[in-house]
Length: 485
Image (tube, rainbow, N blue to C red):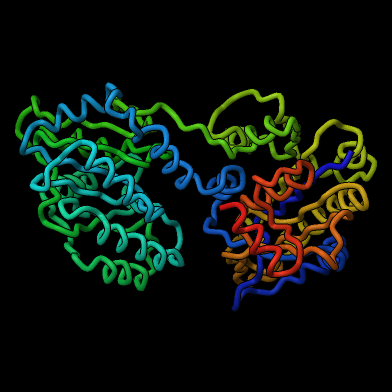
């Protein structure tokens, strides 16, 4: 039975200019040998920490999927029958109440959903609606795209909807101290912070100051976006990360600002928030149709994920579509380098088990020295050699990574000279499968989720699943691309 194998060497990437060069081919002769006969391309990544990278691998663009779900299953023709929606509309009957929508600007298509929501509620053109943008982007490289998204939002939302606060998700600590709470009080309730109507200039200044977007101090685009007693708050597309610190800043400061404990400040969320506060929501959860669990169920396939004990809970949560379940289609095995360094063990694991998809999940440990890193890569390469020998002329094999690393390390215990290893942004994808002739097929660049889909496509012939593997020839690929639309 033909199977698909994905061998992850997380942290491995394409060396950027100025990076200290490690001869990967010398450290990993088996990888070097495989490269000579494999397809090769790269994936663009936008995450440099493991959790988000795994999320992208197993689920793809979760914000886009979330937005599609909101549009199709929440803000549809039946939304007026939703009791939480009815409660929110009732609260907005107060003619002086402003609507504050907190959202994470990750896709400019969110404009359509916001405009539709405000139109459905029936707020007149004289009613004030403010969008407060919570920025989650991790790197300086994303400022360009973020600026385009925010500008698009500003100029395509309805005329009576205004961008209010823009703040980094990680600017405040998870448990804000008194000073931080006071800063948020001033910003939320008095607009007492920097004001930048030309937000692109402010974002550029943050980039030039080497401040990551997610750590950007809060600023406002108008002086009217303060929260007043009787206003209504809605958290739109921010259900996947904890929002206790924002809610605490609002609740803990409201009584003092409004000078009463009997204030009215109803808060809602589109999808249930990760929070200790009881926030009514229009939907409890999202069904991720493209999760590994759903695809395996549709294809009647089983997967084995070989990873460390520490990673199993997170990987299980993501592979099952942000749900903790005991899924019989997804099994786990602790990653034991000593066990996997034996060729017979690897061969038995791949050839004699009933798993269709097998994922090996290794991590480059760069916490000590460059020499330590080289030695670990050599150990990983031994396992890779066993995997390659087992897969040749039988199974599909992808060798890749989920994220790159950027670290400054001493060269060795006896050499304290520090160098910087920089593998950010691009990761390599090596692919080998005897059924795909190199003279006829090629591997296209893509994103990390495309790697998982491509591996599944090798064992399940389903045209609805995207793949990086394409027949050579521009006309063939154009025809396939348009036929899917």
